[in-house]
Length: 346
Image 1 (cartoon, rainbow, N blue to C red):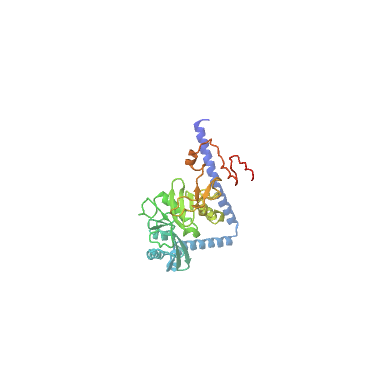
Image 2: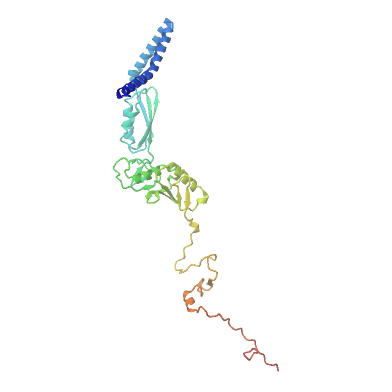
């Protein structure tokens, strides 16, 4: 097959596919036209009249009614603001809302009006027809402190937002002049802080990134939580909460939730640590269960008495082959000779 024949075949295929794509609308239009012409003339006139009225109403709504003063926004209510910039945020929203109608609320214009306030996370708009509009502002919730500034879980710096309760601290090497954290480790730590459940938020002391373990959450009066990275934060917090609530994990020094499906608690409980010796004591008597069987305790000093096996000096001085001879028994009364024979009685 020559190149010209191949090109002609491709063009024919393109025309065939184009006809197939346009064939269905054309067939539908032809079927509708035949059905319409088959109707009685009076019914056709009524249908045309209804269609014309609908077109007029749609045009009137689109080009006049929805932007008419008959449905203009006159009363605006703004709720949910707690930041120190609440007055300016409210004024910006009210000014933008007064340029709208209840039939044509432009949410993009409202969001543009408060774009300079990062404390606003979302807007919830409710229409009170014909002239009312209620705007509820959803603010970012502070999750941690970076320096002296509260930060949300997504890294947004919340300047001016009041702080309620105690927040964990995060160290950052990036700049704090913008609206968001620029330091990647601090951003990941903020994400972990933002996912903390409400019952534990007040107990979080510090969140840091350590080499080898990743993100570590320090809990007041509790173990350290090893998160590793900032993925699956919700599942890791659920695993940490379950382990903390388990009585068998009481006294653990750390909880590893890097694998949220298999959390691990480790470390020694405080109750199992050996007691500290009092000031001035030179030695501590070990428990009876751990003392060697040949250990002798001096009752006068309550300290270990060295033996031949435990005292290096004694063991070194004693000859290895010297026999141990027991002390001679005391001679009975009346004995005179070394052989132990008694003299004849008088």
